[in-house]
Image 1: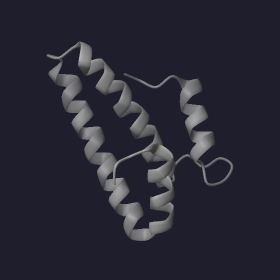
Image 2: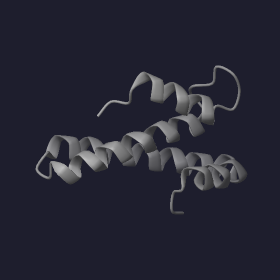
Image 3: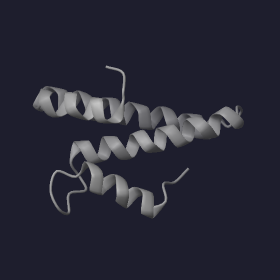
Image 4: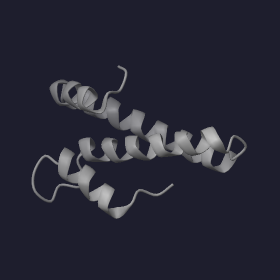
Length: 89
């Protein structure tokens, strides 16, 4: 399920490191997390939607790689982001 543009702008504004920042790992991870949450809710209703399940797994893998990158580059930003998003790590 696609994120609405208003919701996407809200997430970008909340997690951006500076004005106009859309590509930092924090923003990308936050957007993926929101997408993962909506896909999870979709799959609770539509259990046999295997195409969406594949998309979900791809998004989880991409988020994992970005988290690993952020953890290796800046552990304090990683810890802050994990706490703000409520992810288990």
